[in-house]
Amino acid sequence: MKYLLSNKFKKPGWILFCIGIILGVIHSINDYESNLLTTKVISLFHYDTIFSDDSAILKIVENSIVDELITIIIIIGGLLISFSKEKIEDEFILKVRLDSLVWAILINYGILLFTTIFIYDIRYFHVLVYNVFTPLLIFIIRFNYVVYKKSGHEE
Image (cartoon, rainbow, N blue to C red; front, side, top):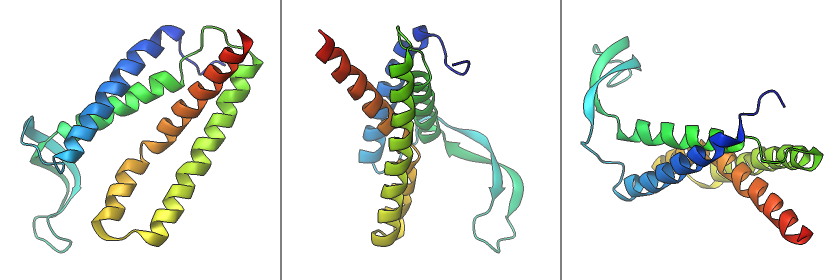
């Protein structure tokens, strides 16, 4: 279990993850439009149109970084939750971690296959954006549910 962080990272992870999800929902309700935190950023493989004279491998552009910050907060929070040790790490927790990871990957790609077949245009792009977070979300939900359910039966 060398790759797991100390249990003390779990609480900050939950704080970041919850804040990120709340901000993400608010941002998506507002149709991803924001002029907050507009700044100059480095854009890799930038092009306005495919055959534009304005295409460049590296370019400095002006962009609102709200969606990028929300994404970073959700990912870091989710990783801190997922990769922090439990107070008691035993074989049961190890098995639940592995099973939850398998569930998360299978469900994630099941959703992706289903939406690839039945959803098109910009809605498909939205699914792909959300699909970035589903492995972490499914892992966190299933892992904590199984651990909670097991601890409830032991008392």
